[in-house]
Image (cartoon, rainbow, N blue to C red; front, side):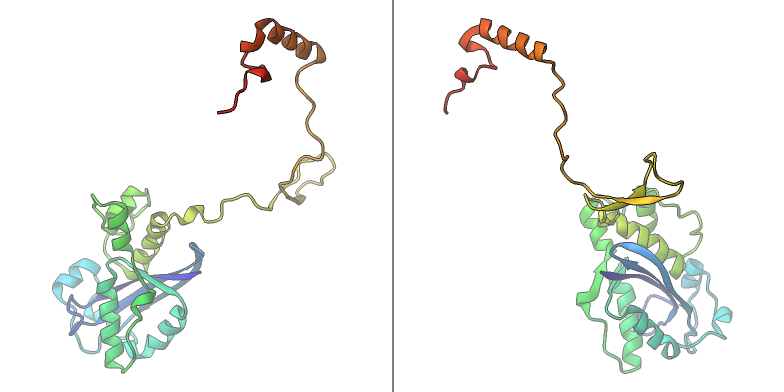
Length: 238
């Protein structure tokens, strides 16, 4: 199962008029981080960054002047996310901006069936909150000390760890199966490994009680009579 954890930074809060200026994303396979990321800054095509937004993410108009426009990076984004579920924190915000950008280019909107809102997951799991990304990092002991300002890639990396905790993904591969281990037998060369398979013992272990102990126990039970709890004669049908 392939999933993409993503985040955006924008010029403001209005998806109808504001623009995406940064996209960050992290790939998961079967709830494990693969190391494949997507990150790009985007020229907002003449739209100025609002002062309030600048205070949040610190991305200035000057920093974006030489960056590609959305239409120049959209195919790379579509290729990176093809066939994957899309996970974002407060996903309606990010998806709304993507859909507005797609509409400007005549592209179809994101299929809502592939979108998972990690904020909704967190609210269900922790109904008393708080459930901001920073709060969830504290809850799950995830180091977010580098998060002085919002950044799409850093936030995606943190959210990936949070999401794995939310869905219990760290337990995904635990189970009784064939595993590869170091062979510590006397005949093994140093560094040699072998496969260990769980199977029944070829022969049962020897009884821990001696014949004398078993005989002494039987003699004691005989002296206790029919009321002895070890006596088969006391077992009655219910």
